[in-house]
Every structure is written in structure tokens, then in C-alpha cells.
Image 1 (cartoon, helix red, strand yellow):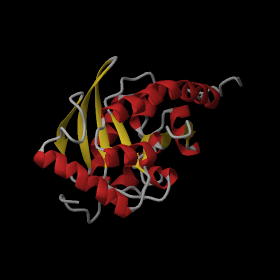
Image 2 (spheres, rainbow, N blue to C red; image 1 turned 180 degrees about the horizontal axis):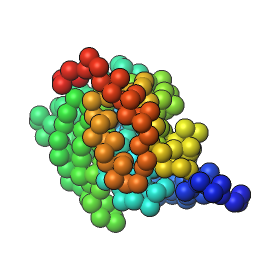
Image 3 (spheres, one colour; image 1 turned 90 degrees about the horizontal axis):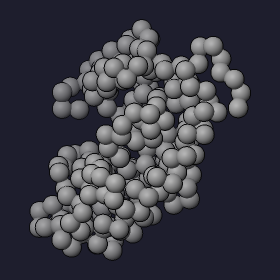
Image 4 (cartoon, rainbow, N blue to C red; image 1 turned 60 degrees about the vertical axis):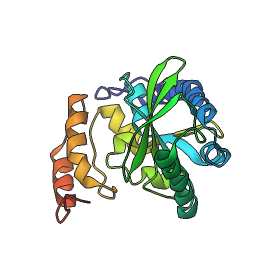
Length: 220
């Protein structure tokens, strides 16, 4: 491994090594979730299109606890609508035909379905993010609000990807705002969370976030 630059907190090599070591555990979490799904269509959609992104990878790279596992669905709007229809049917009429007792639906919003899963190594919070549809995992992370979360893991082919912008953010623990993000209104609260985790918040990030919030209403 190359030696760290004196200003680096995490080297790129260190981050890549840690990321590769996460693959077995994330694959096992994915398999556990899949094993809880009973509805054949839901199971097929999950196994084919779901992937991990964001905080569940970032936090483990920083040796922080994982609060939840966010799963996005790399599919068309049509398939995403079908997925939501199945989830809504289960929510309204009973989940017994869609997932087993190890999964409990905690809440549903316009953004996601949040589950609690009784896992072999404890309780895990799982989120199926259903608000957005994109044609590739890269397009999903290109819309994340901060570059420190721009990463994904595809269980289908065991591909782990850390975007170069994320690597730069974690190398120096600097929080960089992405003005192309979906929902800047939630980003202010997340900025405070990341600052508490040790990320430096440069003035440029605050200015960019403030500019993005112009004209945004509370219901957006």
C-alpha cells in the first residue's frame, strides 16, 4: 500500500481494501432478506434489481455502526410501480403471502418501505427505496446529496463501487454537497449528522446547500 499523504485520514488503498472485505457480509444480508420474501414476483424483483448504496457501506468503511441498509431498485418506472403495488397490497391486506415473520413492516412513506428483520446476528433495519427509478446504479448515486455516500454494491455480480468523489471525501473527511441531489431539504439535517461524525463542513458546502434550498417548499 502507498503511504498516506500527511493530510489524509484514510488512504484510497485502505478504503478499497475495507470495501472488498464488506462484500461477504453484504452478500449474506442480501440473501437473508431474499429468504424472507415469499411472493414469487417480489422475490424475483428483489433478486434481479435490488442493490445496496450509501450509508450502510460508508459507515462500515469509517468503523461506524450501520443504522439501516438502504436498497435501491435498478429498474424501469413500470417495474417500480409493480413493486409498489405488491408492497401496498401486503400493507393493506396482510403480509403473510409476501414475506415471512422475520420481516416486519415498520413504516411506509412516499420514499421507502422500512422493515425490521430478525437476522442471524441481531435485528437489522432494512429500507426498500421506491421513490426513484434510474437506468443504472451510477445514476442513482449521482443524485445523492453528499459525495461521501456515492457508493454501491451489486449483489448479483458481487461488484463493489466507490465513486472517486466519495474516496476524496473520505480521504480527507470533507463534506461536499452535490447540487444535483433529489431532495436538498433533508440535506441540512444530514449535514449536522455528518459534522458530528467528524466531517469538516467547508463554507462552499454551506453556500451550495443554501442556494439549492432557494424556492424549495416544505412539501418537496
